[in-house]
Amino acid sequence: MAKSPAIPKTLAMATLLASLRLHLPRSAAPASSSPSWWGLLLLIAGGITVGIMAFRNVVNAPKAAITGFNDAWLASDCDAALEHMDQEIFEIYFVDCETFEAAASDENASYSKPPKISFTSVNIVNSTATVETTETFYYDPDERSFECTYELDNNGGWLITDMVCN
Image (cartoon, rainbow, N blue to C red):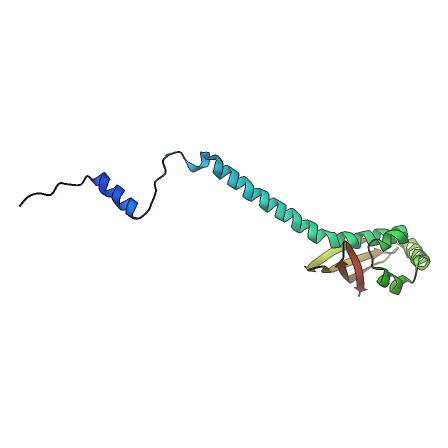
C-alpha cells in the first residue's frame, strides 16, 4: 500500500479559509492606529452632536416664542408681542395694541418682582407645539402660580395660537 503524500498543515488551513471565504488582514497593525477608524468615529460623534443640537433648537424655538411674548408683556410692547402671537388670538385676548399696552402697564405696576416662567413640557408634532408652563407672579406680599398651556403653530416661525392658564 503506497503512502499518499502528506499535505502541510498551513496549506490545509489556507484551503479551508479560502473555501469559507474568510480573509485575513494583510497587516497585523492594530485597528486603533488605522486612520479610517478614527475618521469613522469622528463622523459618528459629529453626527450625534449635530443631532442633539438640532433637537435642542427644535424644542427651544416654541419656548423662545413664549418667553418673547412674556418679555413684550413686561415691556408693554405691542409690536414685540405680535411677533410671538397670532394676530387673531391677539385680538381675541387684547382687542388692539392700545388695550394690550394699557393692560400690561397696569399689571406690571402691581408686580413686586418680575414673573418667573418654568417650562414643564414641550410636545411638538409636525408644525404644532403644545407647551406647558408654571408661571409665578409676585405681588407684595403674595405670590400666585398658574399652570398654563400654550398652543403654537410654525408657519415660518412659532406663533402662539392659544393660551389657557388655571
